[in-house]
Length: 93
Image 1 (spheres, one colour):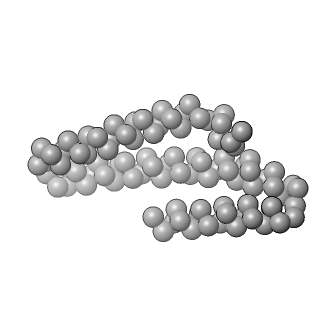
Image 2 (cartoon, rainbow, N blue to C red):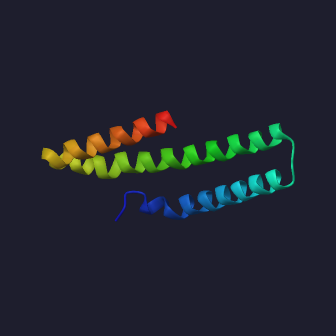
């Protein structure tokens, strides 16, 4: 079981909404809409994806990382490094 399983339906709902936003952006470009309007929608979709990323990261930290830390050993170290690397990727994006 993934640590985000209890929130799976909410995450899927958010992702479907983001899919709709991205499709709308494609239509805006196809329709030669004003650049700033397109950029505004890109920023909104980016923000929505970041929100999903943070929800997934919170779930991972609260579930997988905490459980591995309780057990200790190399698995705990690996989970903490994995989470740290994921945070670094999110910060860079």
